[in-house]
Length: 443
Image (tube, rainbow, N blue to C red; front, side, top):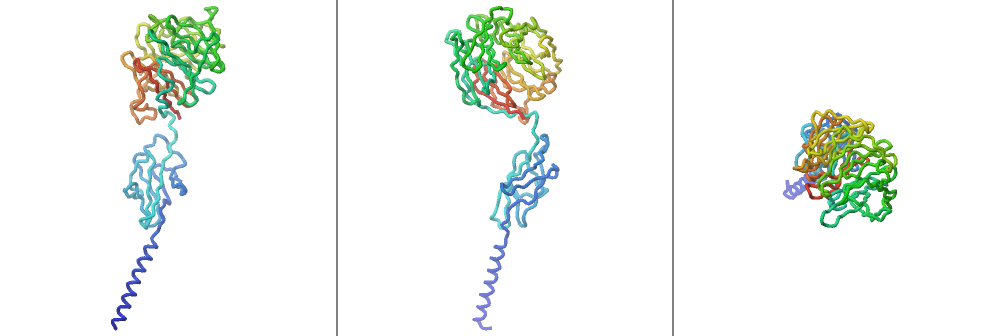
């Protein structure tokens, strides 16, 4: 063979192999997607949305299911690989934690084309869960006392600090969202400011907002103020003492049935000191119009106490804890179906003996938050799931009800539920006012 022909043949062969190599690279698939996906242990079908590259189960898994170690099976285009970070996934073999969304990366056969898919496992709602969040660090300001009610679609708070040697500070505030608060320059028909006293009780009843009783430097009051718009207030003083509860502060007020109820409260404290409680009362009064009152019980079966938790649950009025007139902290629980007859709950594992806390209702659960036993102020959570018979402290951060680590200690605060939301406002950490406002979203 001539050398010239040999060179030509070599050139043609090299060109052929180069051409074949390029063709082979061009034929490598650029398909990067998840074609099929399942987690056999869950026995639920999964949908792959190729538009937003998401993978999920339309039929929710029960909220108690352990998602921390699951194996997924999947089908990919020929030659493609699946990774989480740098870890190559093997169908039916690799174990992953699905308690949070998992981001998969599909790498096509060409090694260059890739797409991310987010796999999420949808759970049924935990009926016990409460999602807590701090709404406002400043709230409506720093006060020793604040009483709160929902009225006309707003949250109103009557806040007051009673000082012995310096001027008092007070304010009536409202908010629509809990973040932005507006002060209402409110006054009554006698041109006195609202609120006029500390430790009164704000309550919404029959399309009006009511402010009941309270403490001044020189006296406790049985004055009642009411408003239809939050701005213009009307003052009512009892012409006949028999038609109204005696002057008091820290009174407990609750709307039950078609009536407004006042339960106990405290007489004038020594030297008018707002930091201590006067003699505690255990009488019970009710009113169908907020102005004319009927004494239902002169001395209820429960011992007189200061700063108990009073709440509605299963069409009953409940009263729990507080401190008696000997400053003994209590952990008993009482209830009434008619306001007249009070029965004690036969607790087996009682709640802590404290005062100045609230008990909030979440379906069939009772949630007790914070309070004080005199020596310490607490920022903890106790729960009863059997109508107050047994209580347990929630300490596991994985519990769906647990309070965040930065939830502040507080006592003598106000709290309520509105719809499926818990509001916690004001209060004291020992003697320091707590300004933070917290919400708890219930499922």
